[in-house]
Image (tube, rainbow, N blue to C red; front, side, top):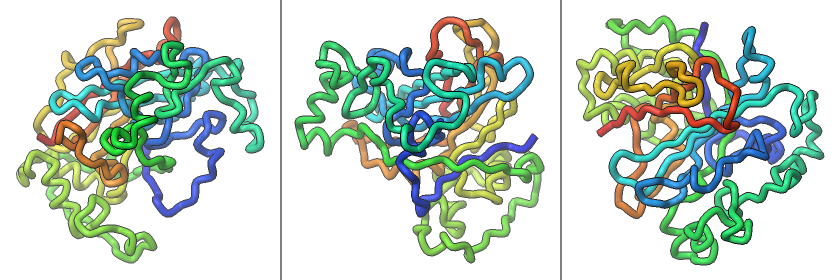
Length: 336
């Protein structure tokens, strides 16, 4: 089964309705397009336990499971990823999984009309969102903000300039990587046929992860100062060569594509599902190429957001009982 890839086209025009919940987007940044409105996580669940600052929404992936035994309760299914941009060490990440049956209280069985997409919002169900970040607001802050932190940011320009709250927003485009499976761990053929003739070539900055002439240098820097004898890094380069701008690799029940030999988890490092007890399995990974699009300044701790691979592990049964937004697990393969 080919790996599904997510990419961003910075030069395409995204219509506003494509980013709304009714169109089930996969996207980076902006505010979350919540799937289940009545059960949106509380503000306390989206606050860093170490620094007590609200987490930043990184991305969401629409990932229904169209397999026997799943399609009934996973007809709609979305994974949401948040991170703390303020913590310097052992950065906090939070992943939520939520899913709906085809017949549900929010969406019709047929695709929504563009004209009504903006009206299908949590407000129809009496749920108010924070005007700053789009997460659930609280009564304590007049159902306008999720926290005192975001209330202060909204009224203080200096704080707006200091803290990252909402990232640049992009739709994630989906495609298949038929060549990915053919990348051998021990392959000696790591040369890639990179073409500079594409329409986007003129828009690619030198030295970025999209710059084919500089991709080795950029990725080597991320991969623990670039051990050129690292067999995992050689596989990584070969695997991404056909689509070097990929920001997502989706391979449910498969294996991650690690960037190097360091900080690869063992089975015991991946906790079992806290709701049903099944051992979690890999579902998708966020690639370091995403950093190119975020263009984050240094945080208040003087430590910019950086990573090698973010691998998301989820319940293999996508268990449905109980809590509607279930926490899953993310493993960070750090570049440091």
